[in-house]
Image (cartoon, rainbow, N blue to C red; front, side):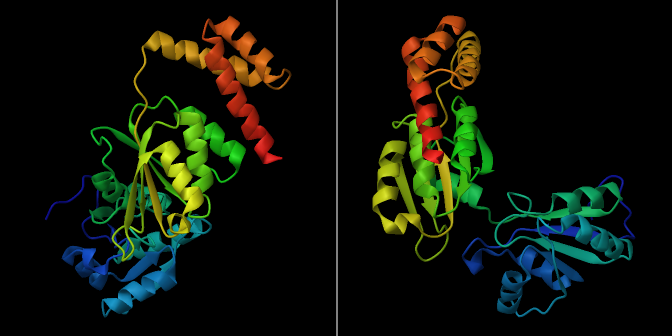
Length: 295
């Protein structure tokens, strides 16, 4: 048996278990065995996990562990680990800790010297990347974007020059607005894919430019249903000096827009940074429109 450095083999063990994102057949034999052997299952939603366990013919002690109670429940689970028990950590679907609770428990369990074992399996991140038709050599996962329009646009502005492929989760009722924001900030011609209901009966993958996908999301009701994972191609890499100039332009523009109309703010930002006045004005208009949309 392989043991992790610094762990006590006589103490309990925490097993971080990936569960299906839709299709029950994707649960591995190893995950099934680990759930069967667990003394307690820490679950994001005990009802959903209870349904999974019932489908497997298992009856287990369940303890909820979510964003609002993780610190409190981690203390309880650490006591059980210290008593030599096996604790299984699962999320509603997919791999725990990837936009799901569990970090605090894993950190504390490892710090206390307990073995923390990964039982890998399904994740919407890898599934979406595998079918998106977007480069996968380098990518970064951004989880969910902010729900408020102004905060979402600010986050997207910060990602606009990211050269790696982006992977994001989004709620179905926000996908149309998010795609429209992405098209405006990243450019309507950026390639992207939207994977909906992965591994489920109505699995659908939409591919095209951000402009095309935004239009489909606005027009097609089915596009705005189910679990959604977005994959967006990275930006073309720019020389370091150009990136520094762009960063200065954006910083000056953000401050100037608080006091000046878009045209004057753009002229000032371009003059200070040495950047393109046309580029500064286009960016100023996008930011001004985003602010008006919140009112």
